[in-house]
Image 1 (cartoon, rainbow, N blue to C red):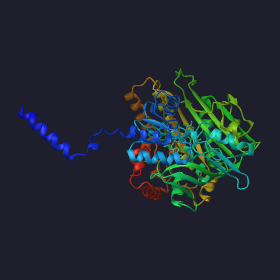
Image 2: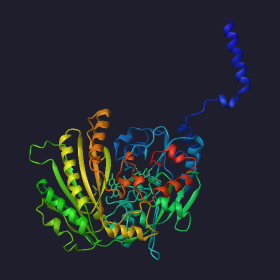
Image 3: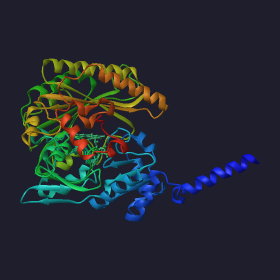
Image 4: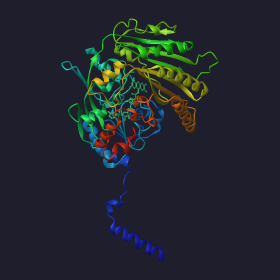
Length: 500
Ligand SMILES: Cc1cc2nc3c(=O)[nH]c(=O)nc-3n(C[C@H](O)[C@H](O)[C@H](O)COP(=O)(O)OP(=O)(O)OC[C@H]3O[C@@H](n4cnc5c(N)ncnc54)[C@H](O)[C@@H]3O)c2cc1C
């Protein structure tokens, strides 16, 4: 009894000194931000029901399906820059976690996915325009690049963006390698003005003249770090008739094709000719027939006739050659009409970079042999592994560096090349086995160190590769990040590149 009386006494004392409002239970940060946003933006823009079709679509449409396991407290579909600003302020007030999603192709967890926080899905922001007098194009961040290209095609113009129609606009903030890059640089090199919601929730313009430091960081320094871009104004480029297609080889041609790719990296001088060289391993048993392996070359020439530009590839015995005249829609929808998308799955990317000199080209052969050996040894653990070679010629780095002294990557002179490694792990693996195979894949990529002084492409990198640190502009980026995100709101509350 005595004990009860004294407990009661302490409780009364507490009640007399703590304000009543503080005793009301505070919602968790995610639901609190969502409730606030539902009030200000309405329930059409803010979806909280996990059973809503919009919610399911947003949650399920990740290239790396591991991200679909997370459950946002709500998903908001802003219709305007002002909506995005309201969202950032509410998220900040509630101190909630959040993520910004454009196309959902970045495989790094929490880059465009969030658990128990606010997912800002930009898919409803799809306004576009074209000004014939200035040849400037504008697009909002919603919708895949394929839709953006189709919008500008009636003017026979296009913008520099993804090589596959299905990829989203987040690609451009991390550089953006296109079939047109050898002529015009990366996607971000064509930016002329960006509208941005800053981490403070304020709306700002970034251009050569206004907030030039922010403009620099957004030209290739990565998404979700310095703010949310709500409108891109970019230099457009001509898009007329292309000569493009895929050439498919049996694996018996592996070294002949690799030699032809090496020569293309080193010697191609024609900026209108672009390629991706893809080697693939499938999960089917090998049976010593090599039928589990394929080589696909994507060949794109900006002009109706590629002349002799691809002769070194087409003269090698092949199974299929679809080279033909097409428009830009056809280019980005190769190899299958309407099927321009790599499959969703337990996907991870990794990247390496090597010089286009004797040593770098010798490395290419080694990288390929290592990848092939790894793929043979790890049968059963994946659905697909691929080894994609992406040449970076000097014409590309010249075009990039010609605008305002170059982008955040500060691209060293070509030629050099990136290799993008894709691993689609088997759905049958336990979480632990998945982590093990991903770790082993990481080891494979690290076996041959990249050429020092060349940048790892952030669009093809995993977070642990710390690619931004390989950028010529890294120290400057760090300062800009500290200026525009001074209290580390974006660093702490959403996933993304590490600046510490
Ligand atoms: C099938 C496939 C093909 C690809 N092809 C190419 C290619 O041709 N060239 C190339 O360079 N790369 C390519 N990539 C890599 C691709 O560029 C990256 O995966 C990129 O992150 C995808 O952008 P997204 O909008 O689809 O993805 P998201 O995951 O939605 O966005 C990527 C990142 O940017 C942030 N972000 C997006 N929009 C904004 C915004 N408006 N403001 C601030 N932050 C934002 C997101 O938060 C996220 O961190 C390809 C990837 C895949 C899976």
